[in-house]
Length: 222
Figure: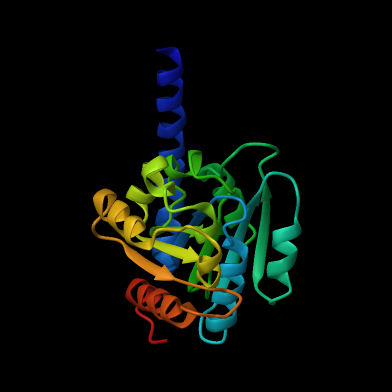
């Protein structure tokens, strides 16, 4: 019982900070996504493709979450996008206080779009509000189609799913019909994008969706 109370207090404190962060982001008209997924699903590769297809029209920044290294942030920095690395020191998720500290290093005066790439994990990050407008979960066909039912909270709370590595589906036993059926049983109001970073398949449709969300949030015409 003590563990439950501690967890509630942690989330309560997190939510209070998230409210303050969200107020700042909303005042600036910054559309924010919390990019989630397991290690190896391709979150950073997806993010690189999003940057490639949007940065000419969208002022964008990235908060890069990782346990210890700066490897992903270095990849993003090569695309000439503002990026702040947050190392959790072993914690399996980002929280609102970490985002609060990262925002202090981001110029939001002309910012349209903020991506928070969370730590690779399908469990803990789902529970933490990071002041995002929407959660987007990345999963790959190589992980198997059973992940939504095994980790339901992540998929129930996400507004969109990016099904990555679709070019490799012929090398797996991924059951696409069952995947869609399971997703519908958890969340019937979710967008699914079938994507291949290697072939750049589905990227344009994904970026059109994001630009629409950015337009709606910031009143911009992209």
